[in-house]
Image 1 (cartoon, rainbow, N blue to C red):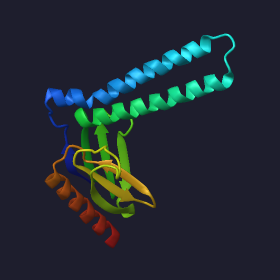
Image 2: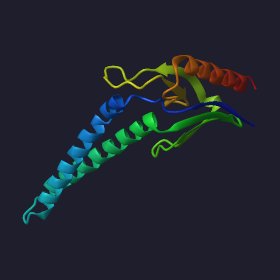
Image 3: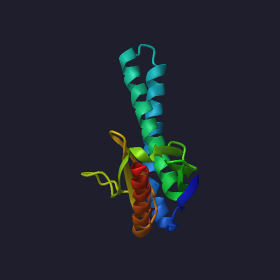
Length: 169
C-alpha cells in the first residue's frame, strides 16, 4: 500500500534574494581556494613539518565538507522537490536533486512527534517553514522545506494520524 501525503516544490524567489542566499557559498568557495593554495604552498616546500601539512589537510577536508553541506542545503531550498508518502507502514521522504539527503525511510511505529522547526536555538540560521520529525531513541529529521505553515500543519497531523493507527494495531 502506498499513499502520497504531499509533494512540495521549491518556491520562486526574486533574483536578488537568490543572489543573497548564494553569498555564503561564494565566501566558502573563496575560503576553500585559499586553503587549497596554502596547502599546496606548504606541501611544495622542502623542509615542511609533517604536523603542519596534517593540519592544513584536516582544515581543507573540514572546509570542503562544510561547503558541500551548504551547497546541498541551497539546492534543497531552490531546486529540489520532496515527495512524502506512506509505504507499507513506513514514512518515506524522497528528495530529488539533493545529493546528501535523497531518501529517508522511517517506520511509523518509531515516530514520537512531528513538530514545526524554525532553526537552532541560539543560532541565526533559520529554515523556511520546516517540520522536524522525532523518531527512535534520538533520531531527528527535518523535511517539508518551502511548504506553507498551513500545509505543513496539515501534513504533520496526517502523519501523526497514521502513526496512531499503526500503534493501535
